[in-house]
Length: 254
Length: 254
DNA sequence: CGTTTTCTTGACAGGGATCAACACTAGTGG
DNA sequence: CCACTAGTGTTGATCCCTGTCAAGAAAACG
Image (tube, each protein chain N blue to C red):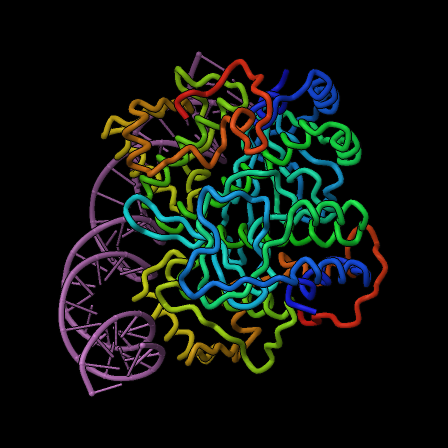
């Protein structure tokens, strides 16, 4: 059981056969050091990078040198939406920490998906969630203040980590530097620093030694207008199709 | 031939049968007045709204009343990515002008797609482009100034309209009010007004009576760091798979 | 340990927000 | 045909959130 399979279980009641196939597909693991590229513009999308351990991101660099992180990839995340037609990757994908990842064979995966409706549902669900995350990012950048953006991000990260099977009750890793947070949230490192201090002073979070603890969940959610619906955490139990309920563990407070 | 089919021709060399089926699917047309919702949160995604005439958008409203437009839908655009698993729509989709639209049957479309690889490619391409547009939006909101955001948006709109078969040589319709532009670009109406004037004074655009003319294409692109690659305008001719080249008209300067 | 990265703090500037009028347009109804 | 109204565009004055510049601390690292 790895983060990838753990996460997909949230989207559909995977069969044992599904899990076996998916685990097999992620058997061979590659590594990337912090800061290294996992994919660069022009790469073929025939093989899909999947993060197993560590954090990565997709980013673009403007002509004036400014950088914007478009998407954060946590353990279990696929860096390209499943099944997407062959194309060339447009953005950079880089490791933010030391990363273990597999590159799924798009062809093998697609073949299996044709046989397994549950697996298909899980992968579509993953795409749906990824899309929603990017849309939430648009809303944050467009209409939230610096502190609100930080709060929203922290709420999202905590929930996403739990979806990948990483416990967060006693806090979670937050390996991003303030420069990286700034590139992700469309801010300046200096301002990230000050906004973080505001959140700390308000007693909402504590963040030191790359470790994040959310002290006041509800208050932080209220402040940052965080509504976890968009992550569809328990889709496997609540999908419109009425799939059988077979998951033992759920993420209740979402 | 409508905007929908016109647009999909950019993504794959559709056969005559493809076009017939797609035209048939969009035969029955519904209308929505300006400002009316086409879909609201909770709607089922079993039927996919496709814009045939007019402009629409997907938006979210925060608890504090602020609105952010997440995506602009122009003629030919599908408001939900094709084939996405059944789910409930999370955002509002509203008409920005009087709109003519069809609601494709997801089931019928999927059945046809299983038979037609070209149609499948076209729909995947559409999803790819839609995703790229949202990512470009993230970059704009995060790292571009007000005037740059406006410039980038105008460049994008002009090209997207041409992809849908709407000529833009002598300018194009720009029905958005300054309030709507503000909600789309994460700005204030007042600031949109002033930034527009800057662009006009610089001789880059003219915008009056809901009609936009880009006076200096290259300069506007340079200013706003607009690189049309992400729209994959001529994907049908350049896809990695090496599909046959069969389109007669291309959009050269992209 | 020295070196580099990251974090923190201060002073200051500026892009964009806010508030408030006023003009212009377009639709509406008498 | 003309008031009336509501939405839209324009402008000015002012504020403040965030960016910029710069320089120390602190932590990470080899």
